Length: 316
Ligand code: CP
Image 1 (cartoon, rainbow, N blue to C red):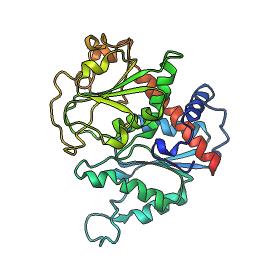
Image 2: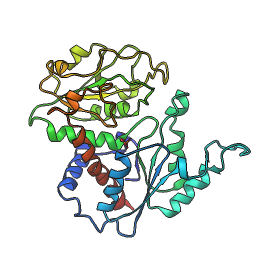
Image 3: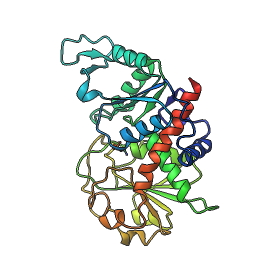
Image 4: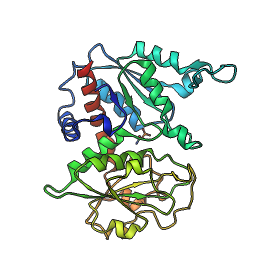
């Protein structure tokens, strides 16, 4: 594997999930695979889970791991081709990515969308430039449009908690938030579930439709109560509007999941990628109760990352 930016980079989804399960049971089995190999983790945005779990995954495989908060510790990056750099940017991505490629065998990069210009964000310019100029295998640690390591961990969590022999009903339920949040986790989750052995229903208020390329295999409804009927898993997530790009269109009153709403489901397990704003996106009663899988999801981030890094190391 040379690139891990979406589900489309995975030829055999079931096998990758099985590999993550195997690594969860045997985290140090491939301790020598990454010997004398360097993993560079580059962050242009904050992170707790992605940073620590991917660092741990690399270390479990015996890799040296370098982490850099490029937004705070690096030079201001220029991404425009042909730019006259007489303004605030100090270093062009052409040199920055190429230099990192010299220091690292595999590079992970996190860069959020700016939520101002949809075309610009959805072009994934920064991620694609890193792929082009670093000349090294690239793992997305969350990009403008997707969060594939999160989605693999989510699928692993669903497989581990699903009732054997039953195709689970999975509901992606929009939740309120106080500020504009990217669509990437929701896009990515919908795209991955669309390739998995599940029935996916997406529910959100009017105006929060995700881009059609991510929801091809989903049923979409603005009726949350109907969506929750018989659900086995409810994935709670806020996102800002895609159609009125980056806008918050409603305060979302009535959309927060509660134990009362869960009565409509098939004793559904509740998921969230974290960080979560308690009692805004999800209630204390759910997060502190038996239906919550949020910590299992976070734990599975390590083995999702380890499965991807293992494949990349094997292909070096
Ligand atoms: N879920 C997730 O990506 O968490 P962080 O932003 O803390 O990495």
